[in-house]
Length: 293
Ligand code: HEM
Image 1 (cartoon, rainbow, N blue to C red):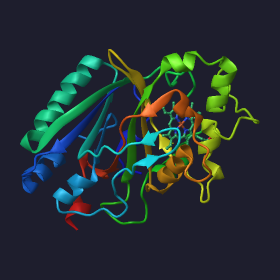
Image 2 (image 1 turned 30 degrees about the horizontal axis):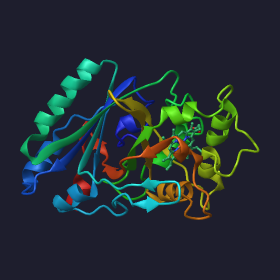
Image 3 (image 1 turned 30 degrees about the vertical axis):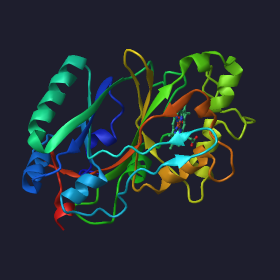
Image 4 (image 1 turned 135 degrees about the vertical axis):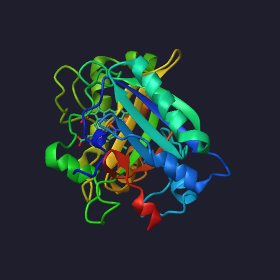
């Protein structure tokens, strides 16, 4: 769809920087609008507005809400709301640094940069556990259908709802498992990426099997590994036409329905969780007309 931010549909880049901003308390609405509207949107730049920013700008987007807090016996999905999310992709980490400085400068006084995560592609799009991530992603027209809003009119069509979670892996815990045990945690064999038919109900792909939900819960996942000096893991990023599929998936993973929690929690845990609305774009600029309606 021509009005979508192209980076939502593109394959994940070689390197990325995720920028998370909060707004100043005394936000000048006009100034904030102007700053957002001059951000250049291209295939390597995706921008999402959090619920607090949409409210501060005086708008309402039906279906936009804060990421829930969900707890189960194996762990917790925390909620760490942010006002603005920018996902920058590229080939060169130095260029990405300069690009994020330009974005920060363009956003001006209204926005404060709260955190940055540097991410990268690992081998042929694998999680740091070594497993291929994205195999069951919808492709082609189905990807557009899953990720983009349609039938809601100009200003909303082509937009998308995105969930962003930072996960920290315990790679020692993973490495302490036998390879067959690791395969049963994911529900796929690392050797050939085939699904394991008799994997336990706790296996990640059993928990999240998109067609097994009623209604089906498809997501367009665009996650990337991250690391800093001390820790490493995955920045889970999933786009959809609403948060319904996402919340159905989260509830199953945490065991809210049947008490079975996702075996992923044996070696990794989310330390953040935020929801954003990615507006459509027109001529390389965000189309924020839905906020003025
Ligand atoms: C550290 C966190 C995570 C890791 C390492 C991870 C890894 C994986 C891997 C290796 C697969 C199998 C290959 C594929 O189809 O992509 C997979 C599938 C999947 N994951 Fe995750 N995942 C994580 C978090 C999540 C979360 C938070 C959700 C949803 C809320 C999720 C939803 C899915 C879905 C929908 C599938 C495809 C299931 C199917 O239809 O077969 N994942 N994930």
